[in-house]
Image (cartoon, rainbow, N blue to C red; front, side, top):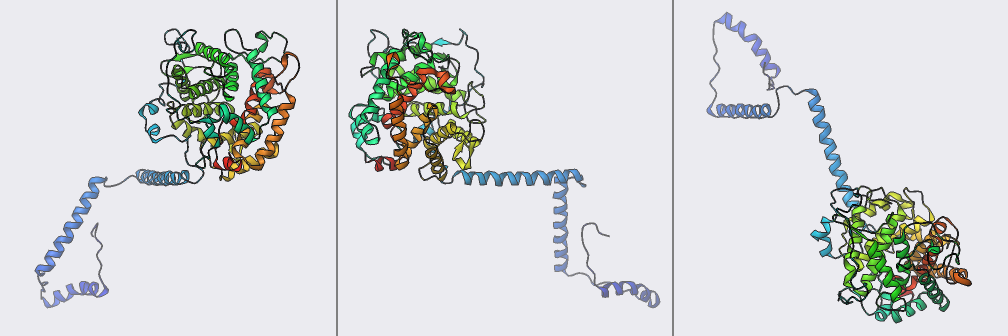
Length: 529
């Protein structure tokens, strides 16, 4: 028998083979087979050589007898790897679909390929070391803010990408997702945008009145406290807050002034803003590896304080603010939860929607100020939004997909800033939900974010929302005694933040017409800016 070869014989050959011996015995005749021809010999040698070569190679690669377990394992892992490769390919194809394109605040190709930007994303640890004298340094006060210091020349408005405010207010936006900038806050632009966007003389008066109340409750050290009774006010105004973060309170106050175009360089509140920025500088802590820690207990304050520093730098080009603002950005990048993509109270914690919203707005403010803002954190943050969305992205939850009003407003605004076009069906459905809910009578956190969503969206839904929101704030502003110009609404956020928090949020909501330029071209066309 042969082991490897299959020999085929027909029935006649078999019959001849069994009869031939008997014939040979009786006749004593021996019939020798004819010798093969030269061609037959050559063909036979080639066949044998091919068989020997194949068997030799196979036996070198594998043992003579393969264990059954080895064969099963080999086939299982082969098909697993094949399936994984197919899944990755399909994911890449899905990620490139319309409405899912990465549009992180119009980052330039230079920023995308920046080596420095990528290095920021690789901290040696995701846990922040305890502050010690060995590595914690108090940030020097910006020289421009110190009394008697000479002014340092920073980037010009042209270098920062700022254009003439009035011209910007009247110009059409040039693409589907542009805008969001600070160009409308100054001079004639503010007045034109307020009037054309739905503001009134009464709403602008309410803004100024609110700012005067905030300025009157600034502390002697230049900061603010949510417990406004610690200021010269004492107990003249009711409803003090309990939140202990003074950097958070100071940042909210500063954002109210900056939103109306008042900086430490110009406007009737120059000194107030200067002292507030001075306070943030004194409270900031620099860590050698992770940037500037402005938290004073919570990442809410980190995001708010970083926004204030970035906006002040972007609006004035004051070079003395650059290091503080960049350090705030760097700390936010470090503090992100890499696996989930969000932010929470402490660095590295799995994120929630509300804390994350302030951090992303801070990164946006840093990008507008031409600071070093790496784009990978935004790619990761989009994954976080995916994890808390429902109804395909129309609704958003706090830490899961159970949609809520406030977190939906935050999520939709973040989708706008991270690239969803106005044609996205989930965004449209989300705006419809917000429009149906309408403004809240007591939750200024929801009102602040939802008003921005509706303003960027524009159209008849915005006009209806604005009329309700604007008139409600104008009529609920306090008009008697020391509380004149302030607001207070009793709810979870309002109680903790107190009258200062409510007033700052109300002022920023009434500044919506010029605080950030509209994100979508359709908005500016509809209102004929």
